[in-house]
Length: 360
Image 1 (cartoon, one colour):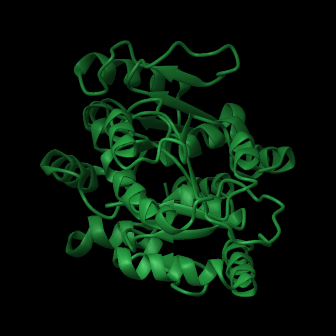
Image 2 (tube, rainbow, N blue to C red):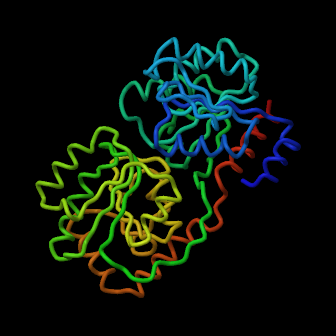
């Protein structure tokens, strides 16, 4: 959002103040989007992380942290309540199940605010996720989600007429042109954890590398518990000279690092909107993805993506594109056009907050 839009929000949004509670300051779609909204909306938006993962930087205006190294707990819930009271928001947003105790405490102590449950995945990761989400759904005023699949998957028949809204998770509008020359250069960015199934992506890459000596796979992102296992896997497959890790990078660095890449490879076991896939398509990379979460609604096999069904079919589809530059260019252009007219995240937050405020 431009600075003019931020000014419009202050003028026409009746100075609506938003307080967003997130478990920890990690590198994921939820956290990156919330940080961007905070930067763009300025004093109208406070972002609170329950887990004290690091000391706030001097530039972190309106970003606060809990005192403990665990997101779940009474101390951090009380800290979130204190920060909210100081900020005095009109709308309080809760993302992810670990915010449950802060939600319950604020629901009791801050009765005259509007409470938003923000869904980011199409299914629960475990029983406690399901239970916490069910409780927050029962007690919230409004439900937001990053995709229709998240609403359908998490709520399903529990819908009770509460207001719902899908929030676009498009964060950037890069000036991109279709990639021209297909080559066996693959990239992934995001957290290195089991849900992203990077091990499965490496297995697929190894099959490509058997017949493509120039194949390369760049893995971008911070370790969330899987890097050591992935490095062992890469070594056992003899791919140490072809698969490289960079650690975490910001978006401008990712754009620079992926200039040579042709394909975005992410075979997740579970997803919500899958923001990295959206970003990759905006840059003209042809995604190779599993049809999970919202991915199944915007990645169309053979048109703007290769939708993974099994290893053999995926290898054949990749080989076919590598041998057909014109078709690859068409798919790259189609990936870009998929998001050309999509609204950006912070504009969606403004509109949604306005709806909640006026409904109150």
